Amino acid sequence: MAYKYMAEAWRKPSESYVEEIMRQRIVEWRKEPAIVRIDKPTRIDRARRLGYKDKPGYVVVRVRVRRSGFRKTRPDSGRRPKRMGVLKYKLAKSLRLIAEERAARKFPNLEVLNSYWVWEDGRYKWFEVIMVDRNILPELQLGKGRGRVFRGLTSAGRKVRGLLAK
Picture 1: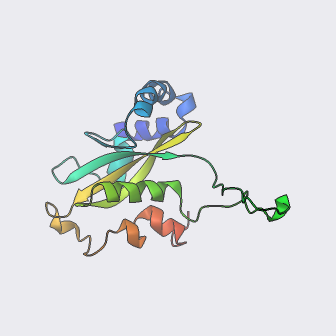
Picture 2 (picture 1 turned 30 degrees about the vertical axis):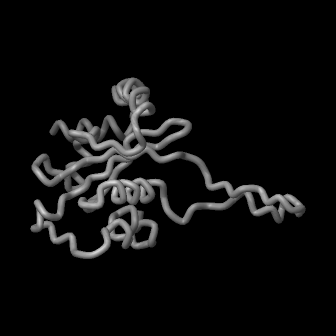
């Protein structure tokens, strides 16, 4: 029952207690490194829905990713602004998928299970990535070879590939 109220509060952070708490936390988060392993998920309701369990083998990592559209550097040689090719370029990957990939590179012994949005400000977005130790939890059937995230098998990867309706 408590998870229901937590989820409701996170749906509209400005109307609930969430924004006030996060405003204080974000000050500390900005000073931390871009990828930080944390003890407990910030949004336990969301983490549990995406497969997190509080037992050995499950790890939560908070990843900070820069926000904004993709801008290419301006070419030196002359051409009219229309042909510069600087603005209106979009990244093929979502920032959430980029966050998952960075977490997977930082922790090569862990497998990315899923991720979710935590907070954002004018400059950064923070995502929490749920990771699993394949050696401790072999019953999860995560497969072998290169990580799931690099093959586009996480929910963020499947969405980018057009396999999820949302």
